[in-house]
Image 1 (cartoon, rainbow, N blue to C red):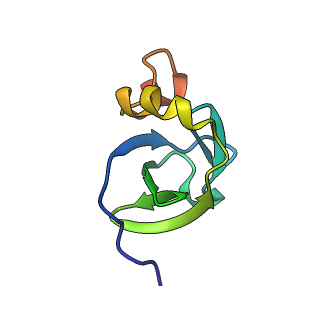
Image 2 (cartoon, rainbow, N blue to C red):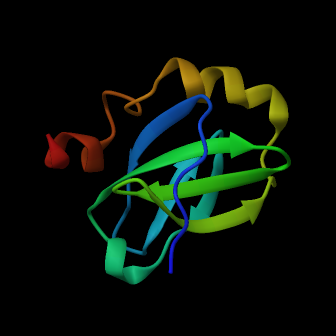
Length: 89
């Protein structure tokens, strides 16, 4: 059973066709059932927490460059030129 998402700064990302999301220049796996879905990505303690509809579905150790988090949080819905973002709109 999935646990409720933890509060903190979050961003919305669309899961790509391989079942992954990009955050701060790194790709994190979410899973094939979530392809095309909008998920919430948050930094909680020393991990990246991915939630879908308010429940945590994946937790990964942080692998991205921490200095890129500011840019990731400043574009909460992804980059405007991202084709997967335009398709989900």
